[in-house]
Image (cartoon, rainbow, N blue to C red; front, side, top):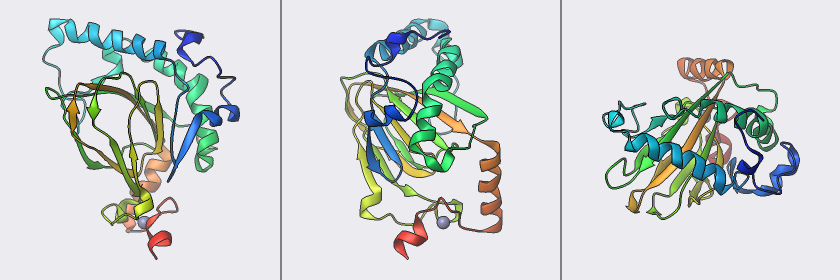
Length: 234
Ligand SMILES: [Zn+2]
């Protein structure tokens, strides 16, 4: 358990296998919401973030991607090893159990960062898909209002701007310690934050082979198996 304490997990977590599925609520459209990580883990990461924010030499950080002005890479916080251990120990097996589609996928990289929403930082996030197969999204704190995460259904590259069905519009209210696991190609956005600040750990689980399939479908203007557009609206 290098760089990872057992009290970072909730007490009843038995192992990293299918038993843990009972901790997640199936929200539909391959979106799962539940708690397997403890407040202790959230507070540990929040401590690292607050240390970083108080250090004046970190005041003028560069944006880590085009969508967030105020995101922080986990490498900047010195917690890369913790995240790596967390992924290998718990999250990968959880993903393989929750997403049978990705059972055989080893994932070749994990892009991890912290998003910060408040009146002074990013206030919301526009409609987009992630550069990931599966996204892990852990809420690190409480005391905020608004900034719900809204999903609008899984699409391939050519159907990414198509309308959604009612049942694809799924609203997640973030709660401290709770993780959202979702298909990276489930289109989503974040409502404006109304009060307080919200910090979340985001991990994009990526795979080169699946990325290549995505680009090929895009180049050839072909729909993909993962897409929920034609078979649900057709
Ligand atoms: Zn499609």
